[in-house]
Image 1 (cartoon, one colour):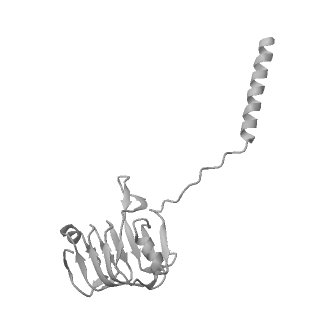
Image 2: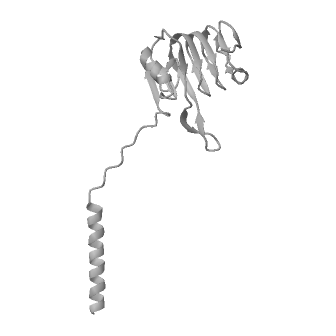
Image 3: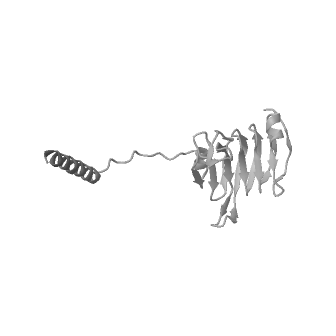
Length: 182
């Protein structure tokens, strides 16, 4: 009988401990910091644009209106877009979005980015659905123009940048497209 009473008390105490533990306030979750490499920058002025294209910026830079930058600029850094390829590896991508879209991803407005010179140093970069006025110097591999007009020249600073460049049928370049070492 003593053994049954002892076992009963142990089960009761253990149950009470479990109930009280469940009622205890939870410790706050650790602060999470957003992964700036997978978030987007929505920009409407030259200062915000310059910050967004820096190596500490974001993978996608989306304009909300025409922007003019009065100095040479560079798209720098290697960024992940938050997606994985078929092998489970992070997808590297950098995108300057010169357009607005609706909830169905239909382009609703196109914008113009103007700068004397834009140097592309980020791999897997693209300029999409708008106009760039100025010259583009491409030093990184796999640069793309998608639905974009370049009102200027596109120069490649190395053979790899030139051989991996792509532009779709909707993209145009008004000036030269050639290899030109800086």
